[in-house]
Image (tube, rainbow, N blue to C red; front, side, top):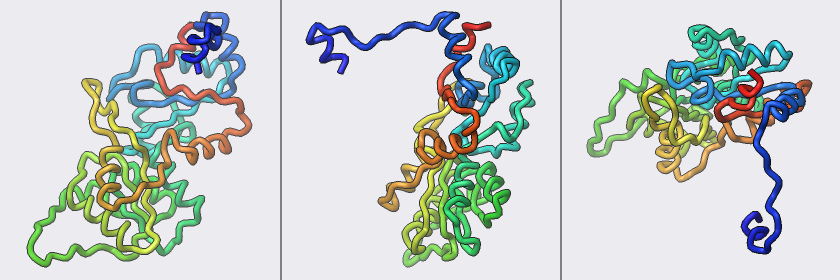
Length: 265
């Protein structure tokens, strides 16, 4: 559209840089701020410059702060602990992880209580599922298991698994991929859920690392099926947050470095 306007000699869409005045006006009009975490609040275990001052200012202004992360390795409880370790006081109720989103997806969709959940991921997913009352297994423990391919070898799996959740998993291996494939392909009606499709992530402060999307892609390829995605930028997570914070509308989603509010400091 912009290219067509320029080709026709018409002015493009109005655009202006934020100033201290316009930034203040923007912030004043927002009730709740949603922040990403990896690459926005921290990189690895290093806090990003300006974050504490920005959070303090917004809280003094009476703004609601919500922290949303696609990193499913930790639960809300574990992330609250990480915030405190970095000198930031953030309650569990202010944190929304893709691991929590996966548990809420099952809960809101009336996942049968007699069914189990297999997890390709880490402790964050397992903890959130257990807190929601679901029976689950897999996770880091299965990262220690191996498969020895031999003639006529049949891979046994639990036929009562009704959902497979795939998230970031530093212990991802062939055993987990086959277990997920067997459940999704051979258990009637088994759900295939992904925490997110992120190709990379700031797992450490030194460099980027393969994200959950790489594990999801491997499982997806093996079953020739696309998963239901529950993390950012899925409609499920955004609808869930909008309902949870309906009283705080309008909301502003900040998925990049928090430079807007820094103008006010």
